[in-house]
Image (cartoon, rainbow, N blue to C red; front, side, top):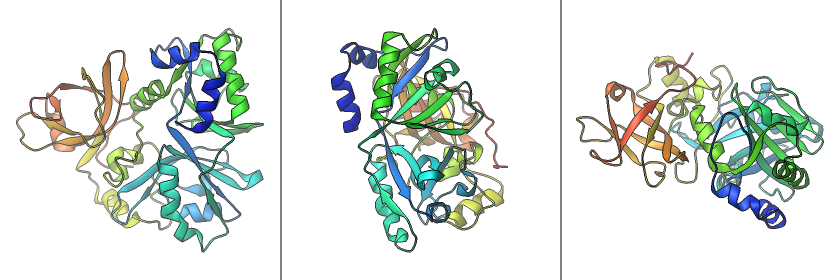
Length: 341
């Protein structure tokens, strides 16, 4: 948990702790999710966008007024880190929002390349936290009436962005504004809209339902971005110039087929499976896939897993071993194609 969040929790009502421990998602309720497991990497300087353009899968020439999702890959085309990105041209700063433990790691990966550009990388963010707003009604707390798909708006104490065309709004705000928002939600003084404060699990579950996953400290260099469906959620540009791992990623795209894709499952599982946990399909002795991310929802566990395309015809999947807990397939909000177009 970020130190900034811990300080906020210590200064807020004890009721908050109870709400954070027992979240229940409902589409009728807007949620303010305390994203304690996200952190920020700042890239500042006049060359920041050019620098990032040569490092990441997404197209940073399009970032003005927009939220990007993308990946930093190794030479084999496997994602070392994934992120959301927002930019503030006025202070020459691009912020990458990543899972905990990934900001410093990505900074270390890119530091050697930054020597040749007018940029500075910093994972220190003492004054800001990341908040997730779930549901259109939750946006009212920001004073913004609506946002288009991937639209990003800078406000006086931070930034609010819509993730694709989902009901998820990512906010990077100063700790004082975060305190005000949490207080207003707890007191019910925000608006007439029904809202609740919850912890990150609710956000994670809604990300999974939206078909969006992230590489964490335990899943670095396991997956090619297309296996995470990043080509289907605008996380890869096939028209930009070179970047690390681009040759492998482009070759898979123009070859026209992928052996593995990210799919969504649900099962009655006691403990959330870790990234990399194997998944088995019927009548196979070898794993047919592995878990990317998981989250508890209403007593069950939902997860995204990279699964062999040929195995998708199977009627049943099992977690961890051939006779392990049964996983039931769930739909994604976008079509899984064998070629990203």
